[in-house]
Amino acid sequence: MNEEFIMALKEIVKDKGISEDLLFTAIEDALVSAYKKNYSKISHNSQNVIVKINRDTGEIDVYSRKNIVEEVEDKITEISLDDAKEIDARYEIGDIVDIKVTPKEFGRVAAQSAKQVVIQRIKEAERNVIYNEFLEKEYDIVTGTVIRKDRGNVFINLGKIEAILGQNEQIPHEIYSFNQRIKVYVVEVKKTTKGSQVIVSRTHPGLVKRLFELEVPEIFNGVVEIKSISREAGSRSKVAVFSHDESVDPMGSCVGPKGIRVQNIVNELNNEKIDIIKWSKDPREFIANSLSPAKALNVTIVDEDNKCAKVVVDDSQLSLAIGKEGQNVRLAAKLTGWKIDIKSKSEVSKLEETVDIIDDTKELDNTEKIDIL
Image (cartoon, rainbow, N blue to C red; front, side, top):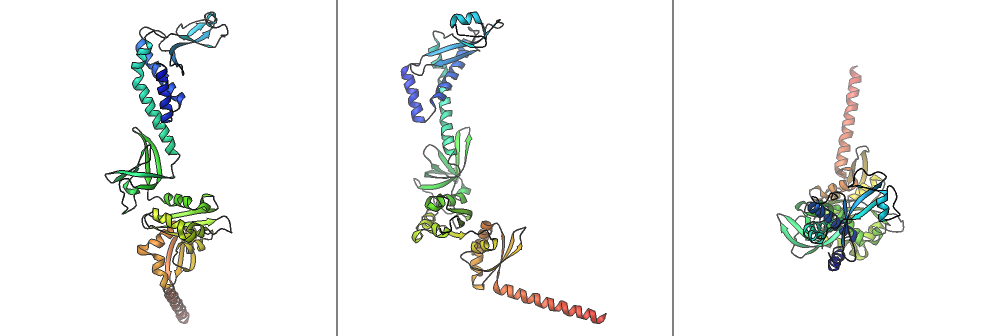
């Protein structure tokens, strides 16, 4: 090694973002392996050596490490105090002495033997840098560029790495074009034998949450809180919000001036409908709000332990409350965590009339039984 090689290594450190100490340590470890491989037959000290590289000049030195003892039993690993003091008078019993044993031809052997190991360590260090960088972005939004499709998967360039948007993570009927820039939610970052793998999603409710945090300062600052989200990607989402400041309207903050904030999110999600719901600690009020845009006339808690509720709506609101193919009530149930049974006002009236008739019949039956007795 020489000064040019050291300069090249430091350039790698700068470009790749690898720790300089980590890189030099990796090279030194590789040179130890090279020494043991090439000099084990001619040196009894080959199993007890270290290699040191001068960070400025690139000079390599091999040292045999020995413990200072009163009585030497193993000449390979031990040295007497008298012999140690000949090297440095400050040595004491228990100290470790590094004795230089660098072979004349070691520089050439080192360069040949350690090359592949050094390259591998650099690759590993690079992978760790990328892994740690994207691990910090897990459960967050990143912006990337669509680069290709393969077997239903979409691959997105995130700069230093390609992310995978699997079929189950794609919004139904959404088209992904080459060089298209899109925002995705990082679901998982994991290590594989081929490096880091980043799994992203366009369907995860977390994407909606992060988009609101980007668009709504009150959410980002913690004044307004997103309590829950239910989503059927590509079709509709419901977002329950709550304000920790009574002077701040949580729904108005999310909608924004002239609806610009929520519209930006809708545009990013390719016109997915978004219902912003006011959260309440009162389950009756929260359930009623969750059925928006339908209006509930009455909410009754049927079974609090199993979270079952019955909601009465006006006849004209029934189809709106249920939604197309039951979507509205289904999303409301996911949002609130309650099982919701919706009845129209006329259905409830008929049911109550039926109950009254049954009760009258029971009274008549009881009277007949009394007469017979």
